[in-house]
Image (tube, rainbow over all chains, first blue to last red; front, side):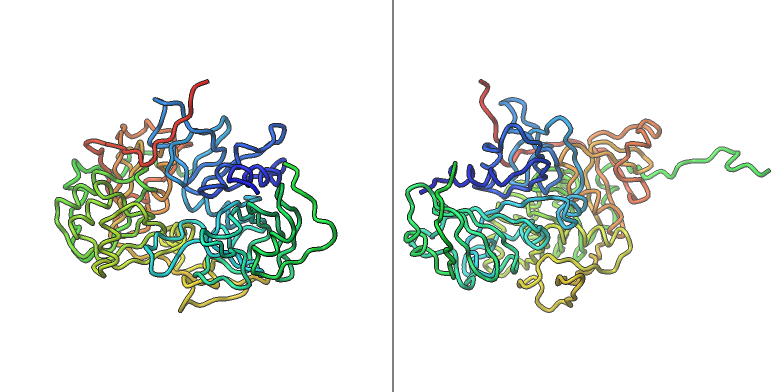
Length: 217
Length: 243
């Protein structure tokens, strides 16, 4: 079974040479730490920076340079800053190649819910609805089940949706799954996790074809 | 041959002397746009003056709602806001209290849609189609339409009385230059309201800014002033260790 860093490490393998990538808050942010050193990649943060760099050294924080999580960051050499409309032109216009974000629920048809739990304080969707509605390549980083042990990979989302039919890949603590033809297709198992474990933790339709390899991370 | 402008001509002067002059005409029940992302790039001086003016029942269009004791949180503490239009409002206890008690109306809007609704107002588009929010509660009651096999939602431009933006540098012609990610929604809101008020950290003499490097041309700004002070509070201070 993978921890959060393990999930991030596996997702990092999906980041290809020449990609512009938008990373959501949480596990997705960790992905940047595991991207191969020999590929060219730029991270976009929707508040208005392309070429996001690491956190600043202590004493070098700049209140005018933050990411979408409102954390102080730095800009890489070659970075650019821009306004919010331009930022979402990059996203909506499909210039950003890959979006990695977290989710509360994903359904077998690619629906995603990650912004609202009825009865609880609603904080808002931020840029998530624009991101999921626009990107062709969306990877969800999440735990396979919630704290009560209930599957988060469902036939139908029970929570209010963030987007419909948009998720293409899910990487969890147990598995890598692809979504196509309204089904979850099992691609890889996490180290030490059996196909049966994954089947048991997946409420949605799970297609298992042939031998399922263990993740190489 | 006729020559063009073979005479002295004055640039249009947008400079006002202080925040009080800048906010002249702001009244209760108005709709206000405020730039900023979190606490980054917010019009601190204009917000302080809105608190001073004590106006009530305002609708605020702003990506976020500040924190309890800073940014739009100051207006919330004072119960001056009737309605917030934002994409994310999670950092404010007073906001939560007022929302749950029904005192505060909240319209949550996807961030890119919020930016574009401002830009559409600036650019003279009454509405636009976006895929964001299709199939979600955001699209309820809105016109939808398929383009190139994909469903879209019709979103209309905002209409606001005042836009308050914050830039790094500006001049009396209203030209603005932003710094870092403090740019965010500010340029989108310039010219998106009846009156745009820009506050800047540094007001430079006309002619000093390189015309090649102006982010927002002065035509989108009606009033400009140099802010008295900037706290520029950091919401999430994250640092890395030196090796």
